[in-house]
Structures are given as structure tokens and as C-alpha cells.
Length: 163
Image (cartoon, rainbow, N blue to C red; front, side, top):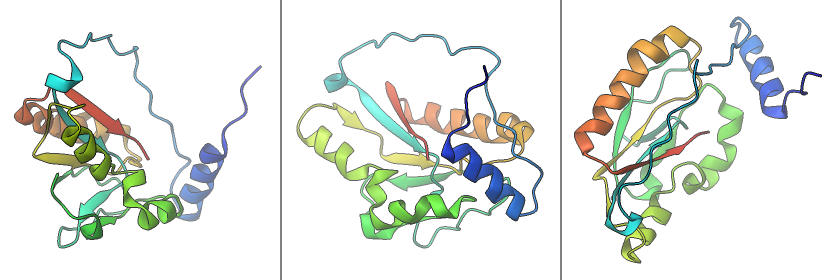
């Protein structure tokens, strides 16, 4: 028996249809990710973050609504009041605009570092738009750019915050 789609899936299909796009095809990896054991305690680790909520800083270019594979670097010291959101699924951003930390937990990470739970935070967090229609562009543009940006930060751990 096939499981029923979640409300999110139905809404995504309807939103893409309203925008005149072909039906959304969900992306999934061909294999499960390899398990990676943590090499040192969180309190000694450098942590970075990627959010797929289309987060950007006031003054940066907003994300385009269709197949924008660009990424934004956002300083960990950015005031919450300067965070903005642009995403193909605008209706999912109502709460994010009311409380940006729901999809970009910049304050919680700073608090965890100040309490010694996290050893060090990346200087910049990364953001992209998670609603990219082209699987090909995700594989050939977005993922390589994110991998390069993450590698440059020399992180021990990475927090992914999906929208």
C-alpha cells in the first residue's frame, strides 16, 4: 500500500502548478549516505550551517523563484533584523519572516557556543533555496558550490536546516 502524501507535498504540487511549472519531481539520492562517526566532541568542534530557506541579508540579491542554484554567505554576527527570505514556496515563509530563527537558528548557535556546548562556529553560514526544480542543476551547480564553500570553512560538523 502506497503511503499518503503529506500536506507539504500536496501544497508543493499545487504551488508549482499555479506557477505554470511541470509537476514537481522529488529528488532522492541513489544510495543512502555513508555513516560518518564524529571524530571529536561537539565542545571541541567547529560547526557550520546550511539553510535551504532562501535566507539572505538585507542588501544582498534575493533568490530568483525558479531554479536559483546560487548560495549566500551570511556572517554569524548578522543581526536577525537584517535577515530576509526569498523562496519559491512563499507561503512556507510566513513563520520564518515572523521569527527568522525558525529556519536560520543564528541566535541558538551563538548561545550554544557561549555556553561551551559548541567549540567554535563558522565565520559564515551558508544559504540556498531548497525548492530547485532542476535535479540536473542541483547535481552540477548547487551541490559542487556548497561542497566547495563548506570545504573552505574547514568544519568538523555541519548542521543542515531544511525548509
